[in-house]
Length: 271
Ligand SMILES: O=C(O)CCC(=O)C(=O)O
Ligand SMILES: [Fe+2]
Picture 1 (cartoon, rainbow, N blue to C red):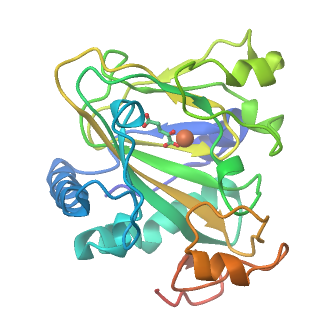
Picture 2 (cartoon, rainbow, N blue to C red):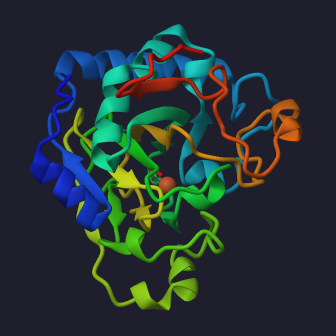
């Protein structure tokens, strides 16, 4: 695993709100990630999250991507991959913060002939609001403009707000109705070889192309929450009992729900 981040990559990420890192995983590591993601997704039997009953919407959403959240919760191999402190450090260095917690991981498998992923922002879905939150997106197949690579609106993280977002729905361009100032910007495609990855800021506008090929486009992703982030009132992935105990402004420092992956000074206690 190549977890080195160069000063140039950091500068590019901060300016554009995303960065592609080639050859992040070795071919042997890609095989392991594919195997664990495959096992962890299969054992969910259609459930979005571990220990919860919500099933995926087969009619539309599953044709955008098969989404399974927090595989680290119920697959030992995924736990090792997702709680790797080196990933937390990469995320912290890109964001320029002292420490990172896991928010949630997710497998996003765009099926053969799958729909495009509508333009959206990630952080407005989540239970904290931060300009420094970001996600890794690891390509488990060669990802091209033909099978559903990511696209980004460069610099959009600088002007994005939390009060508005759009669903990943049938009209993929709805986000540009609420952000007309981005509507004339050229999107940047991010094709990647299997084993490469990108990071994108939680406020960067992004989407993915349709899959015009007969094969699936597999990706494994994870959102990182800066240590010290506070609850904003949104439930998102929080279990009901934890959600009901939180007050707006509480620090999200539950080491079982959102383990600290990396910190410059504090010693992480793994969930
Ligand atoms: O993989 C996709 O199609 C979308 C990815 C995405 O929205 C994300 O990683 O935040
Ligand atoms: Fe997203």
